Amino acid sequence: MAVLTRTRPRSRHAAGKIRTKDGWWAAFFLAPQVVALVLFLLIPLGFAVVLAFMNWDGLGQKQWAGFSNFAAQLSSPDFGLAVWNTIKLTLLTVPFGLGLAILIAVALNNIKGRGFYRVMYFMPVVTSSVAVALMWQVILAGDENGVLNTSLHRWFGITPPDWLLDPGWVIVAIAVVTIWSSLGLNVVIFLAGLQTIPPQLVEAAKLDGAGSLRIFRSVTLPMLSPTIFFSTVVAVISSFQAFDQIYVLVDPKDNEGARTIVFQVYKLGFRDFQFGMSSAAALILLVLTLLVTLVQFAAQKRFVHYDS
Image 1 (cartoon, rainbow, N blue to C red):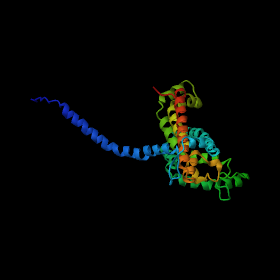
Image 2 (tube, rainbow, N blue to C red; image 1 turned 90 degrees about the vertical axis):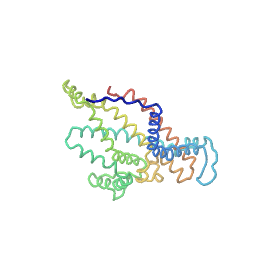
Image 3 (cartoon, helix red, strand yellow; image 1 turned 90 degrees about the horizontal axis):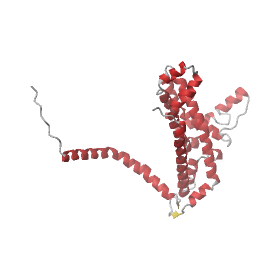
Image 4 (cartoon, helix red, strand yellow; image 1 turned 180 degrees about the vertical axis):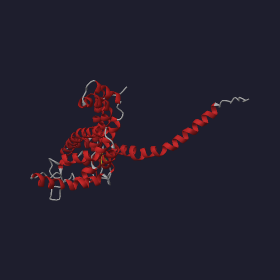
Protein backbone atom coordinates (compact mmCIF):
# COMPACT_ATOMS: atom_id res chain seq x y z
CA MET A 1 0.00 0.00 0.00
CA ALA A 2 1.47 3.27 -1.10
CA VAL A 3 2.01 5.86 1.54
CA LEU A 4 1.18 9.39 0.46
CA THR A 5 3.51 12.01 1.80
CA ARG A 6 2.70 15.66 1.84
CA THR A 7 5.47 17.92 0.70
CA ARG A 8 5.84 21.19 2.45
CA PRO A 9 5.51 24.24 0.18
CA ARG A 10 8.59 26.25 -0.42
CA SER A 11 8.93 29.37 1.58
CA ARG A 12 8.90 32.77 -0.03
CA HIS A 13 12.55 33.17 0.90
CA ALA A 14 13.54 29.96 -0.92
CA ALA A 15 11.50 30.91 -4.00
CA GLY A 16 13.12 34.33 -4.02
CA LYS A 17 16.59 32.76 -3.85
CA ILE A 18 15.77 30.54 -6.86
CA ARG A 19 14.52 33.51 -8.86
CA THR A 20 17.65 35.47 -7.97
CA LYS A 21 19.85 32.55 -9.02
CA ASP A 22 17.98 32.22 -12.33
CA GLY A 23 18.37 35.95 -12.88
CA TRP A 24 22.14 35.74 -12.40
CA TRP A 25 22.39 32.87 -14.87
CA ALA A 26 20.28 34.81 -17.39
CA ALA A 27 22.54 37.84 -16.98
CA PHE A 28 25.61 35.65 -17.42
CA PHE A 29 24.42 34.27 -20.75
CA LEU A 30 23.14 37.65 -21.98
CA ALA A 31 26.26 39.57 -20.98
CA PRO A 32 28.39 38.79 -24.09
CA GLN A 33 25.62 39.94 -26.45
CA VAL A 34 24.86 43.05 -24.42
CA VAL A 35 28.53 44.00 -24.10
CA ALA A 36 29.07 43.53 -27.85
CA LEU A 37 25.94 45.55 -28.61
CA VAL A 38 27.09 48.42 -26.41
CA LEU A 39 30.72 48.40 -27.57
CA PHE A 40 30.23 47.92 -31.29
CA LEU A 41 26.85 49.55 -31.94
CA LEU A 42 25.56 51.93 -29.29
CA ILE A 43 28.85 53.66 -28.44
CA PRO A 44 29.91 54.14 -32.11
CA LEU A 45 26.40 55.37 -32.95
CA GLY A 46 26.47 57.87 -30.12
CA PHE A 47 29.96 59.01 -31.11
CA ALA A 48 28.81 59.46 -34.73
CA VAL A 49 25.83 61.55 -33.61
CA VAL A 50 28.06 63.84 -31.55
CA LEU A 51 30.70 64.00 -34.28
CA ALA A 52 28.10 65.05 -36.87
CA PHE A 53 27.86 68.41 -35.10
CA MET A 54 31.64 68.97 -35.11
CA ASN A 55 34.52 69.57 -37.50
CA TRP A 56 37.35 67.07 -37.04
CA ASP A 57 40.10 65.72 -39.27
CA GLY A 58 40.85 62.72 -37.08
CA LEU A 59 43.95 64.19 -35.42
CA GLY A 60 43.42 67.79 -34.36
CA GLN A 61 40.99 69.40 -31.97
CA LYS A 62 37.27 68.96 -32.47
CA GLN A 63 35.42 72.20 -33.22
CA TRP A 64 31.71 72.67 -32.70
CA ALA A 65 29.94 73.22 -36.03
CA GLY A 66 26.26 72.95 -35.14
CA PHE A 67 24.01 72.07 -38.06
CA SER A 68 26.43 73.40 -40.67
CA ASN A 69 27.60 69.87 -41.63
CA PHE A 70 24.02 68.81 -42.35
CA ALA A 71 23.33 72.00 -44.30
CA ALA A 72 26.51 71.54 -46.32
CA GLN A 73 25.60 67.97 -47.25
CA LEU A 74 21.99 68.72 -48.12
CA SER A 75 23.13 71.53 -50.44
CA SER A 76 26.09 69.60 -51.88
CA PRO A 77 25.80 68.52 -55.55
CA ASP A 78 27.91 65.45 -54.76
CA PHE A 79 25.54 64.33 -52.02
CA GLY A 80 22.52 65.00 -54.21
CA LEU A 81 24.07 62.89 -56.97
CA ALA A 82 24.77 60.11 -54.48
CA VAL A 83 21.15 60.15 -53.30
CA TRP A 84 19.85 60.05 -56.88
CA ASN A 85 22.15 57.16 -57.81
CA THR A 86 21.04 55.27 -54.71
CA ILE A 87 17.39 55.80 -55.60
CA LYS A 88 17.99 54.58 -59.16
CA LEU A 89 19.78 51.50 -57.86
CA THR A 90 16.88 50.79 -55.50
CA LEU A 91 14.28 51.19 -58.26
CA LEU A 92 16.21 48.77 -60.46
CA THR A 93 17.16 46.09 -57.95
CA VAL A 94 14.09 45.84 -55.72
CA PRO A 95 11.19 45.34 -58.18
CA PHE A 96 13.15 43.43 -60.81
CA GLY A 97 15.10 41.33 -58.32
CA LEU A 98 12.08 40.38 -56.21
CA GLY A 99 9.87 39.84 -59.27
CA LEU A 100 12.39 37.48 -60.81
CA ALA A 101 12.81 35.65 -57.49
CA ILE A 102 9.04 35.13 -57.19
CA LEU A 103 8.80 33.68 -60.69
CA ILE A 104 11.72 31.31 -60.07
CA ALA A 105 10.33 30.26 -56.68
CA VAL A 106 6.92 29.50 -58.21
CA ALA A 107 8.60 27.47 -60.96
CA LEU A 108 10.68 25.50 -58.46
CA ASN A 109 7.87 24.94 -55.96
CA ASN A 110 6.22 22.09 -57.86
CA ILE A 111 9.19 20.27 -59.37
CA LYS A 112 11.18 17.35 -58.06
CA GLY A 113 14.67 17.96 -56.75
CA ARG A 114 14.00 21.57 -55.80
CA GLY A 115 16.49 21.19 -52.95
CA PHE A 116 19.30 20.89 -55.51
CA TYR A 117 18.18 24.02 -57.35
CA ARG A 118 17.77 25.84 -54.06
CA VAL A 119 21.39 25.13 -53.20
CA MET A 120 22.58 26.18 -56.65
CA TYR A 121 20.69 29.46 -56.52
CA PHE A 122 21.90 30.13 -52.98
CA MET A 123 25.61 29.67 -53.74
CA PRO A 124 26.24 33.30 -54.84
CA VAL A 125 24.78 34.49 -51.53
CA VAL A 126 27.50 32.76 -49.49
CA THR A 127 30.23 33.73 -51.96
CA SER A 128 32.46 36.64 -51.01
CA SER A 129 31.14 39.93 -52.40
CA VAL A 130 34.67 40.80 -53.51
CA ALA A 131 34.94 37.54 -55.48
CA VAL A 132 31.55 38.19 -57.08
CA ALA A 133 32.57 41.72 -58.06
CA LEU A 134 35.88 40.55 -59.54
CA MET A 135 34.10 37.88 -61.58
CA TRP A 136 31.58 40.35 -62.98
CA GLN A 137 34.37 42.84 -63.62
CA VAL A 138 35.77 40.38 -66.16
CA ILE A 139 32.33 39.71 -67.65
CA LEU A 140 31.40 43.38 -68.02
CA ALA A 141 34.80 44.75 -69.05
CA GLY A 142 34.56 47.06 -72.05
CA ASP A 143 37.81 46.06 -73.77
CA GLU A 144 38.51 42.99 -75.89
CA ASN A 145 38.76 40.89 -72.72
CA GLY A 146 35.16 41.55 -71.70
CA VAL A 147 33.16 38.34 -71.99
CA LEU A 148 29.78 40.00 -72.55
CA ASN A 149 30.89 42.65 -75.03
CA THR A 150 32.99 40.20 -77.01
CA SER A 151 30.07 37.77 -77.27
CA LEU A 152 27.61 40.47 -78.31
CA HIS A 153 29.96 41.81 -80.96
CA ARG A 154 30.77 38.33 -82.32
CA TRP A 155 27.22 36.98 -82.39
CA PHE A 156 25.16 40.07 -83.25
CA GLY A 157 27.72 42.45 -84.75
CA ILE A 158 26.88 45.29 -82.36
CA THR A 159 29.20 47.45 -80.33
CA PRO A 160 27.83 47.58 -76.75
CA PRO A 161 28.76 50.35 -74.30
CA ASP A 162 31.50 50.16 -71.73
CA TRP A 163 29.28 49.02 -68.90
CA LEU A 164 31.64 49.91 -66.06
CA LEU A 165 32.92 53.25 -67.35
CA ASP A 166 29.89 54.77 -69.08
CA PRO A 167 28.08 56.94 -66.44
CA GLY A 168 24.77 56.24 -68.13
CA TRP A 169 25.08 52.44 -67.95
CA VAL A 170 27.17 51.76 -64.87
CA ILE A 171 24.19 51.83 -62.50
CA VAL A 172 22.46 49.25 -64.70
CA ALA A 173 25.55 47.03 -64.54
CA ILE A 174 25.67 47.39 -60.75
CA ALA A 175 21.98 46.52 -60.55
CA VAL A 176 22.51 43.35 -62.61
CA VAL A 177 25.33 42.23 -60.30
CA THR A 178 23.27 43.03 -57.20
CA ILE A 179 20.22 41.14 -58.49
CA TRP A 180 22.34 38.12 -59.41
CA SER A 181 24.15 37.97 -56.08
CA SER A 182 20.99 38.35 -53.95
CA LEU A 183 18.65 36.25 -56.11
CA GLY A 184 19.29 33.01 -54.24
CA LEU A 185 18.37 34.46 -50.85
CA ASN A 186 15.08 35.84 -52.17
CA VAL A 187 14.27 32.57 -53.97
CA VAL A 188 14.79 30.57 -50.76
CA ILE A 189 12.63 32.99 -48.76
CA PHE A 190 9.82 32.90 -51.33
CA LEU A 191 9.99 29.10 -51.55
CA ALA A 192 9.48 28.95 -47.80
CA GLY A 193 6.53 31.32 -48.13
CA LEU A 194 4.97 29.29 -50.94
CA GLN A 195 5.10 26.12 -48.88
CA THR A 196 2.96 27.76 -46.17
CA ILE A 197 0.05 28.38 -48.58
CA PRO A 198 -2.74 25.90 -47.78
CA PRO A 199 -3.12 23.53 -50.76
CA GLN A 200 -6.90 23.48 -50.31
CA LEU A 201 -7.05 27.11 -51.45
CA VAL A 202 -5.38 26.21 -54.73
CA GLU A 203 -7.63 23.18 -55.14
CA ALA A 204 -10.73 25.28 -54.50
CA ALA A 205 -9.61 27.81 -57.10
CA LYS A 206 -9.07 25.03 -59.64
CA LEU A 207 -12.55 23.63 -58.95
CA ASP A 208 -13.95 27.11 -59.64
CA GLY A 209 -12.28 27.03 -63.05
CA ALA A 210 -9.37 29.36 -62.32
CA GLY A 211 -6.34 28.99 -64.55
CA SER A 212 -2.69 29.15 -63.53
CA LEU A 213 -2.45 32.92 -64.07
CA ARG A 214 -5.62 33.59 -62.09
CA ILE A 215 -4.45 31.34 -59.25
CA PHE A 216 -1.13 33.16 -59.18
CA ARG A 217 -2.81 36.57 -59.10
CA SER A 218 -5.70 35.82 -56.76
CA VAL A 219 -4.30 33.15 -54.44
CA THR A 220 -0.51 32.98 -54.55
CA LEU A 221 0.33 36.68 -54.42
CA PRO A 222 -2.15 37.59 -51.62
CA MET A 223 -1.00 34.65 -49.50
CA LEU A 224 2.64 35.48 -50.24
CA SER A 225 2.24 39.19 -49.47
CA PRO A 226 3.75 39.01 -45.92
CA THR A 227 6.87 37.38 -47.37
CA ILE A 228 6.99 39.93 -50.19
CA PHE A 229 6.71 42.74 -47.65
CA PHE A 230 9.57 41.34 -45.56
CA SER A 231 11.80 40.85 -48.60
CA THR A 232 11.00 44.34 -49.87
CA VAL A 233 12.00 45.99 -46.60
CA VAL A 234 15.26 44.03 -46.47
CA ALA A 235 16.04 44.69 -50.16
CA VAL A 236 15.45 48.44 -49.85
CA ILE A 237 17.68 48.72 -46.79
CA SER A 238 20.39 46.66 -48.51
CA SER A 239 20.27 48.84 -51.64
CA PHE A 240 20.57 51.99 -49.52
CA GLN A 241 23.70 50.49 -47.91
CA ALA A 242 25.32 49.25 -51.13
CA PHE A 243 29.07 49.83 -51.15
CA ASP A 244 31.49 46.89 -51.22
CA GLN A 245 30.57 45.35 -54.56
CA ILE A 246 30.36 48.80 -56.16
CA TYR A 247 33.75 49.80 -54.79
CA VAL A 248 35.42 46.66 -56.18
CA LEU A 249 33.45 46.54 -59.42
CA VAL A 250 34.10 50.18 -60.37
CA ASP A 251 35.73 52.82 -58.20
CA PRO A 252 33.03 55.53 -57.84
CA LYS A 253 35.82 58.11 -57.56
CA ASP A 254 36.40 57.74 -61.29
CA ASN A 255 32.75 57.32 -62.32
CA GLU A 256 30.16 59.70 -60.92
CA GLY A 257 27.35 57.44 -62.12
CA ALA A 258 28.32 54.87 -59.46
CA ARG A 259 28.52 57.18 -56.44
CA THR A 260 26.10 56.11 -53.74
CA ILE A 261 25.37 57.57 -50.32
CA VAL A 262 27.60 55.08 -48.52
CA PHE A 263 30.46 55.92 -50.87
CA GLN A 264 29.90 59.60 -50.06
CA VAL A 265 30.22 58.74 -46.36
CA TYR A 266 33.39 56.77 -47.06
CA LYS A 267 34.89 59.49 -49.28
CA LEU A 268 34.30 62.28 -46.78
CA GLY A 269 35.68 60.30 -43.86
CA PHE A 270 38.56 58.22 -45.22
CA ARG A 271 39.66 60.21 -48.27
CA ASP A 272 38.94 63.82 -47.35
CA PHE A 273 39.33 63.28 -43.56
CA GLN A 274 36.21 65.32 -42.85
CA PHE A 275 34.77 63.07 -40.19
CA GLY A 276 32.12 65.57 -39.11
CA MET A 277 30.78 65.81 -42.65
CA SER A 278 30.98 62.03 -43.00
CA SER A 279 28.99 61.46 -39.81
CA ALA A 280 26.38 63.99 -40.92
CA ALA A 281 25.98 62.18 -44.25
CA ALA A 282 25.67 58.86 -42.40
CA LEU A 283 22.95 60.24 -40.14
CA ILE A 284 21.07 61.60 -43.16
CA LEU A 285 21.25 58.12 -44.66
CA LEU A 286 19.91 56.68 -41.40
CA VAL A 287 16.98 59.11 -41.41
CA LEU A 288 16.19 58.40 -45.08
CA THR A 289 16.24 54.65 -44.42
CA LEU A 290 13.95 55.05 -41.41
CA LEU A 291 11.51 57.22 -43.38
CA VAL A 292 11.33 54.78 -46.29
CA THR A 293 10.85 51.86 -43.88
CA LEU A 294 8.07 53.70 -42.04
CA VAL A 295 6.33 54.38 -45.35
CA GLN A 296 6.55 50.66 -46.18
CA PHE A 297 5.10 49.68 -42.81
CA ALA A 298 2.28 52.20 -43.28
CA ALA A 299 1.52 50.79 -46.74
CA GLN A 300 1.44 47.19 -45.55
CA LYS A 301 -2.00 47.72 -44.01
CA ARG A 302 -3.40 48.09 -47.51
CA PHE A 303 -1.33 45.62 -49.52
CA VAL A 304 -0.32 42.88 -47.06
CA HIS A 305 -2.82 40.16 -46.20
CA TYR A 306 -2.13 38.13 -43.08
CA ASP A 307 -3.80 34.75 -42.75
CA SER A 308 -5.98 34.82 -39.69
